[in-house]
Image (cartoon, rainbow over all chains, first blue to last red; front, side):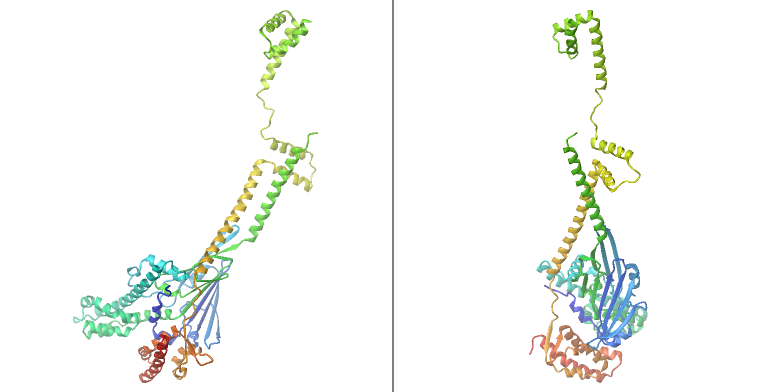
Length: 353
Length: 233
C-alpha cells in the first residue's frame, strides 16, 4: 500500500528556510464548546531564534495569550491560546495573509434534533500555493484529487492494488505539475525582463520559441529546487549573454519569485499536526486518528498545495433534559392510557344494580 | 260476548295476522258495534304515533363520550369549590376516555419512542461505521529508523552556530551506547546539506572556505549515513 504520495516534496525544501527559521513542529488544537465558542491552542516547537523571532506560518497576533517554555530536548515551545466567540470570529482572525501565513476558515453548524444536537465543525485550510500559473487540472483530474486526498487525509486503505498504483502515477503527475508551475512563474519573470530590456538580441519571440526546451531542461533542477542553476540553463539554451541583463532588468519580478518560493518552502519545511476536540460523541470525521472526542490529522498541509483542505468532524450532544422530559410525558401518557382502559373494563364487568 | 272475542282479533288485525274469513267477520262486527269501532280507531292512532317516532334511534352515537360528558356535568354541578386530587385524577381519566384523546396519546407515545430509537440507532450506526474505518486504518507505522555508531563528534565539532542550531535536535537522539537513531527524514536533511553551499554563501554569513570545510565535514557523515541506510556496510 503506497502512502505519502508527495513524499518527494520534502526534497523541495530549500536550505535557507531551514537555516534561518529552523524546522517548526506546529500543533493546533481547536476545542469546540457546546455553546459555540472555540478555544484554539497553537503549540509551536522550534529553536530559540525561530520561536523568539515570532515569524510563524500561522496568524498569531497580539490578541493571543502566549507562553514560551523550554522543552526537555533543549528546544523552545510557544503556546498561544485564544478563545473565539464563534466560528466566524475565528475565520476572520485566522484568514491569514497571502504569501505570508497560512489561512483557514472555520464553520460550525448546529442542528437541534430534540434528543440530540448535531454539531458539524469544518476547518478549511486554504490553498497557499503561491504559484498558480498552471492549473492542476492539466495534470490531475478533480476526481483523482478528491479520491486521493480523501484516502490520504483519513489514511483510509485503498480498495484495490490498482488504486495504489494509480496513486503513484498521480504523485508523479503532481510533481510534474509543481515543477511546471515553478518554471512558468520563473519564465514569466524572465519574459518581463526581456520586454523591459528591449534588446534585439533577445526578443520575446525568440524566448517564446525556446520555451519548451527551457522547460524540459529546467525540470530536473526545479524538482530539486536548484533555482540558481536555471540562470545557467537559460543562458545555455538561449545562447546569449543578454540573458543576465534581462534578469537584471526585472529585479522586482525575480525578487517576487524568490519571495514566493521562500514562503512555499518555509511552509513545507514544518511539520503540522491538527486536533479538533468536539463536545459529545464523534460520529463522523475524515481524521486519521480518533481518541475519544479528539480527532487528529497529520501531514495534511501538502494537500493545501492542490486545493482547500477540509478537516471535518461531526458529533452528537445528548440532550438529557429532552430525554427526561419526553420520558416523563411518555410514562404519564402510558399510565393514563392503561389506567383508563382498566377502569373502563372494570365498569363494564360490574353487574347493573 | 262477541265484543270480547273481537277485542283480541282487533289487535291481530292490525298486524295482518287474520285470515280473510276472520277479517271479514271483524269488519262486519265493527260496522255494527260502536265500542269496537272506537277501539279500532284508538289502535290506529297508536300505530300512527309509533310510526312517527320509529325514525328516532334510541342508541347514542358515542356512548362513552356522552357518558363522560354527562358524568362531568353531574360532577361539575355537584363539585365543591376546591377539587380533591382524586377528583382531579378522575376528571383526567374521564378526559382520557375520549377516543380522540386516547388515539392522540398513543400516537404521541409511538412517535416519541420511534424517533428516539431512530436517532439513537442512526448514531450507533455512524459510530460503528467510523470505528470500522478506524480499525481498517493501519496503525501509524513507526518512523523508519536506522541505528549507527557514527562519529557524532564530527557533527558536534562543527562550530558554526547556525548549523549547530539546526542539528541540535538530531544530536539529542544519541543513545547511551553511543549509537544514534537517525530517521530517514534526517538522512534526507543531512543529504540536502551537501547542496547547502550556495545558500550559505548567498546569505553571506560565512566565508567560502569555512562553508566548504563545514560541508565537507557534514557530507562525509552524510555519505556514511546514506550508505548505511541503503544497506551498505
